[in-house]
Length: 121
Image (cartoon, rainbow, N blue to C red):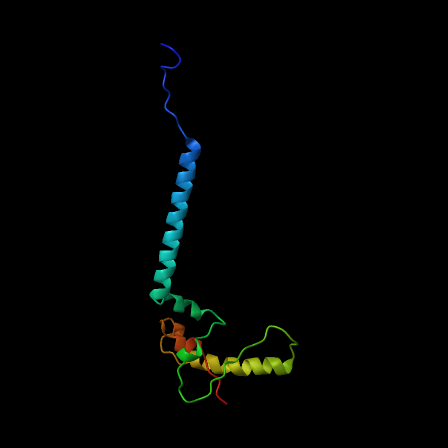
């Protein structure tokens, strides 16, 4: 048997690895795009607006005919008796609303209506 008669199967590892990389990248991009499309079209994107600081757009706000102001305790500035009294006054309002619940361990204290409080003067 001569050297020319021996046929070795050619294994092209670089080509196969490149092909695998391209296919995996296409699948990853396609599934990511599909996931984002489902996330946006199903409306689940609006669940992220429940995070602090994210408010609904002006077109999504309900107009109930009264001005609402939310109390925010600033995490900077001086702390003195006036600031603490102001905080405790607003805290007492919220504490009073929480004490109104018949079952404090039910899901009622966690509803949006009870977590977002409005200060009325």
